[in-house]
Structures are given as structure tokens and as C-alpha cells.
Length: 111
Length: 115
Image 1 (cartoon, rainbow over the protein chains, first blue to last red):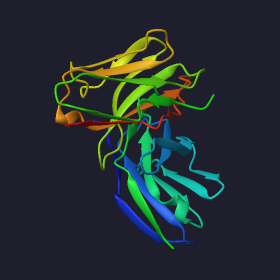
Image 2: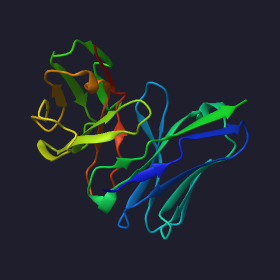
Image 3: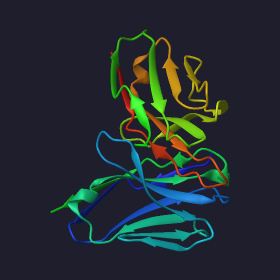
């Protein structure tokens, strides 16, 4: 079936940039999403990108999409301790099916 | 509207008991989803509704699980004869359900512990 893969852990120093990577298998993906989950909480939508775009910037967040390689990344500039959380990549396969999530990347920010 | 709300936040039950969770979506949202999340995993899709119609159910949803959305507003998820493997966070999400833009808004979840 369709799949979304992410690396499990990332550790960065406060003030540095974080880059979280994701690969997906569906060639007909329409939208791809990034969600953030803090301990004991539900998922918060951070940003998303339409499949005909290569890049989207939203304040400290930059999403890059390489459709050829089916690779999605989330860059967080000037990472803060409050950014420590689990980040999930999600794919709306073929546009009209429930989102499929990766296992999440746990971001740890060291002060 | 304050977003998606779920009740209860935590549920501890003994194996074999039935449990029911409630989700109230964002009021203008047509679609309502149930996901399950276990430790170290991403959310796994269980089922979703378009208004009151249940459109899709995952193979994960055994016949002990049933979900309803009787009036197209709130939804309930019932688990009968709970097993220890049912212990997880049960997440509800809602979306406008238009076109191909499926921005899901999640509740805080119900943490189920089956002893």
C-alpha cells in the first residue's frame, strides 16, 4: 500500500536550522502536509503544499517538494526550544482519501 | 468555535468492558475522522464520515469497533469487549471536506488504557 517514511530523531542547537525529511510513494499525491504534536496533545497543522508547487514559505517554515524523487522536507529557521515536538508528514493519496501519516520525527532542541 | 473537542481525555477500563468516546467537530466541517495512535507511531486511519454517512473503514477496525455520526454533527466511537491491544490514543479530526484540500483539525485525543 501507500507509505510515508520519515527519520525518527533529529537533534539541533537552539538558533540553528532544522531540516526534517519525508519520502512518500504515491505518484498522484495532491496535497502534502506537516503536522506538529506536543506531548499529550493532538496534532496541529503547521503547513501544507500543493503538489504543483516546489516550495512554500511561511514565516520560519519552508517546505520543499521534489516530486521526481517523492521527497518532502520541512525547514525550521532559528529553531527554538518551543519547537521541540514530534513532526509528522502526511499525504492525501489521490486527493480524496484519508491522510496517511508517517511515524513522525522527534525534534529535540538543545539550549 | 473552539475547535475539535473529545471526551473523555483519559479512560481506564478492564479487559472485556465496553467503552464509548465522543467527538464534537468544528461546526461547519462536513467530514469527521477517527484515527488511532500508539506510542512511537503516527496516527492510523480507522474510519471517516461525510456528514452522517460512514464512507470508509480501515481493515484495522475490527467488528468490536463501531462508529456513528447520527445527525452529521458529533460522533461516537464504541469499542466492545476491550482487549489490552486496544490501549492507544484515539484521535478525532474534522475537515471541510471540499475539493481535494483535506486540512484536518485534530482534537486532543482520548487516551485509552485497558488493564
